[in-house]
Length: 92
Image (cartoon, rainbow, N blue to C red; front, side, top):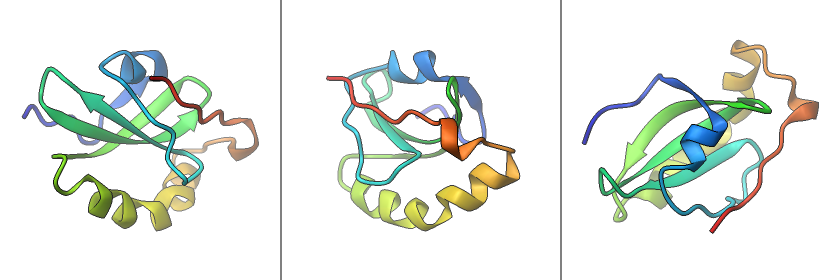
């Protein structure tokens, strides 16, 4: 699995890597990366930028999401995200 943690990606690029489901946490995107057989976990920084914070396998993706959920707003603030202008949506 190629490590993408810490990489800021274009949101379209993040979403283009597989099929996605909106998570219950605002600002947290989880995408299946079929080329690496893993899930990328990202925090939305702006309407078109996502910070990849973690990668997980199917057997531990829920645990990783639970770990990152409480940190979403702090990470967005550190990166100067405009939290009123973020769009979290699903694509399947």
